[in-house]
Image 1 (tube, helix red, strand yellow):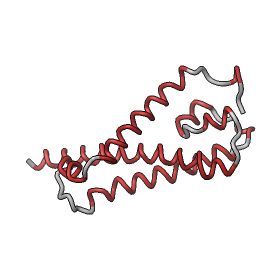
Image 2: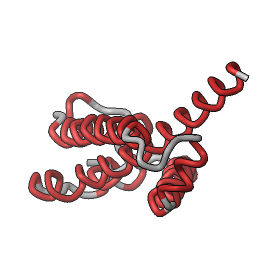
Image 3: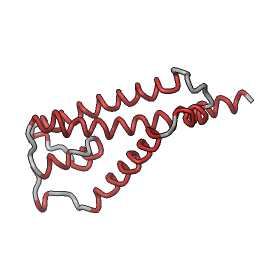
Length: 143
């Protein structure tokens, strides 16, 4: 557990918070968008099953991996001496572990699911951006 002078400079953490905030905001906007708008942007039928299957698979994959990363970050012995900047990039809630030592129950049912939600949102955002980009490139090459 890091305290006082051992904590990284506060300004170094701002970029992570801003990036995660932007991803979260974009994911909320995409999540609240009507299905017809997303279908129109992807140039697909509104009832096409493939419209949401790939982004949901990516969301699940990112969420599962980030849940496991949060558990590894919690269960890692102190002798591993994990780099705080690297771990914050992998697990935003690592900051909570550095400032106070949460219980295993809190990690399993609160912190790790929140980490999974953050990176699940990142996966969903990337899937939509890449998916729409690929569809537009394919349509442009066919024209």
